[in-house]
Image 1: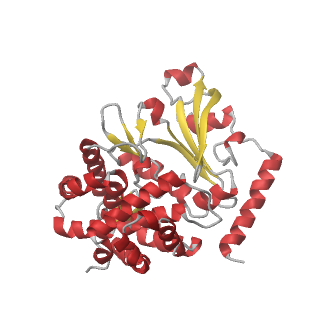
Image 2: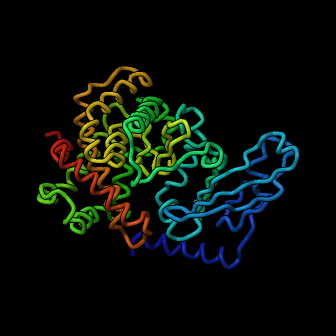
Image 3: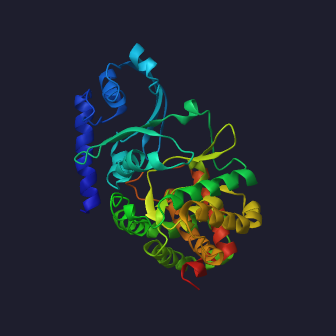
Length: 391
């Protein structure tokens, strides 16, 4: 039996025991097995520690959804001291109550990385993104929770999805945010020191491929969608995985910084003033910014708009990166990297459409198909297979 399967069995035992006992949590050092374990005392411990005399009196769940994590929105009601301190009343949680959730967010380390991002990195970033309030993770049971700002309530944002038309102004705002993110710690010593817990994307890709056997799923997805994908790309299908592996080498070279890694349009929102914001930081890593740039534009833009705008958007990104991180990069070299990194965008979505039985359906099939179609067209348009290999 594989190590992954043994871990899943061990985690299943912890989940079953917690569901049987249904323990409450009342202290900040207790990691809840589910939001069903939360109490006013726990909320007080995690939200009021810096404000003596404040207290959460009760809380209400507004709604919930399920994906790689279980997600819930809550409103908190404080005592007078808490209200006077203007403590957050609208919060959003990402937790790991099921075996599936824990195998994705716990076993792969993404829940822990996201919590550390919000604690250690997010406070220094001048970008449109939620704030984090608390995180906890239990390495033994792989239970975890991240408590975040509910930007739907606090900022009145509109969440994006693949059916939403993305305008040129929206695309420019996305590019500007990515330039600010990538420039913030470009070639920064913290990536080798205080932030060394951030995995290099190449390592993250290779470890994930090994743990979840993801090499086989891109080919399965391409066959499954053969009637809607470019014939030229399908004719070179055997080259896709080797080119994807080759493209990962970029992240071990120079010009490495912070990258989000999962910048599909469903992880963006728009503020009432039109600015684009980025959330869902569970795949945060260190790597080359061309990955995020390629992934964001291919997944967000209608193919005709991408073809018309992408050269200018890549140049805009280069200018923004120079403002935030120093010397302006060579645009032609960046363009080559942009083309090659499309392979990793495709990988992210083929393993969403076709994946290990240990993983849940992370996205609706219609969304996965739409993303794969857009990205595959970009790969075909840009000769990404050759670019990834340096040809």
